[in-house]
Amino acid sequence: MSDSSLVFRSEKLWRWLANFWTVIFMIFIVGDFVLQNRFEFLTAPLSVIYTGILGLYAATKEFDRWYDMHESRHPGELFVIAWTVVVFGIIIASVVLQDHYHVSSETIAVYIMVLSIFALTQKSKRLHAKKRRQK
Image 1 (spheres, rainbow, N blue to C red):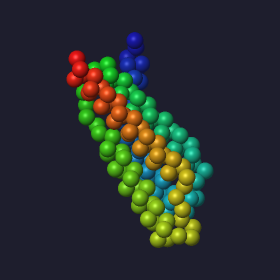
Image 2: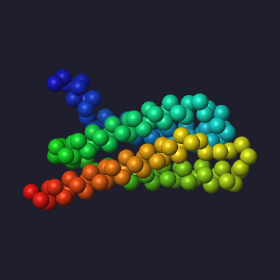
Image 3: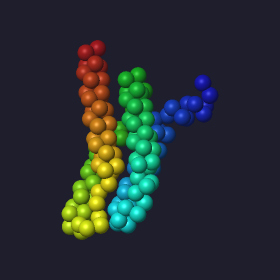
Image 4: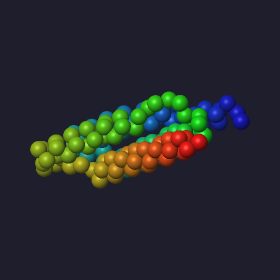
């Protein structure tokens, strides 16, 4: 296997990309909300990129866990907390500001996807721990 394919399969690469796109996408979501959805046409493509990368990171991490190659601790709770703060803040702001400020459906879809990925990885983590205890 070449060095480049090892790097591409690396959990660290996917973690870096997931963190990078989380920050970029959150800034975009908040900025677009403040600008009254002026760039709404970019929300769907960016959300697809973000959820794809987050899904690949979570999958890579879980595969590594099941093959006992996962050692680092990067809790998904941080993603959930960050997204909850952003989504809750935008929802409250849209209620207070009303008129031209609204939460995009893609933002809610991404939030649900983040929660779903987190729930799946937590279940996988518990199943893996149970399997290891049985050995």
